[in-house]
Image 1 (cartoon, one colour):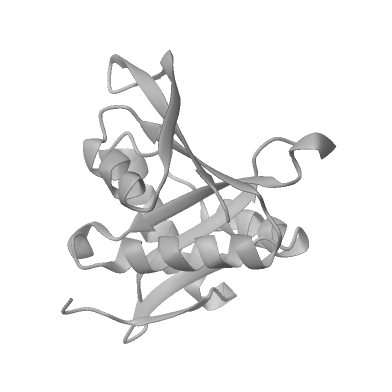
Image 2 (spheres, rainbow, N blue to C red):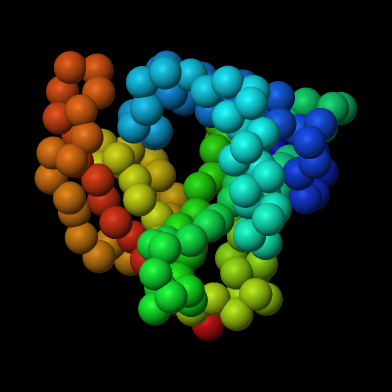
Length: 167
């Protein structure tokens, strides 16, 4: 792990780094089913919404550069789902395979447990075998697939749903 970096709660000053990671994934992958890169204002709104709803945004930073980030939020907006969260972990494309994602997900699971959540959901593009395997190592189990629910790069995309029951 050459680029270990510090893990911490994100601050407004980290949003540009988060935005760089997301916009790369939007334009180069099916990790996000979005077409257009996000603006700084959109990402700041996302960050403020997370803060207002007491959901974490964490980052791994080294020498001022955001190497990866993670967050979780409401799974669905109805009261009966209040003990379930959906998470996201993204690592800068230049720093894959260095343990950054593992550190982020481990911390998110700990925060979810600390906050009293019962279940964590991962929604993953079904062709992303690396992410599916990554989640399996943390105890997530596949609970279903949604066929042809997304369309990007001129093809239909399937989603794999995975769940971790937080103990």
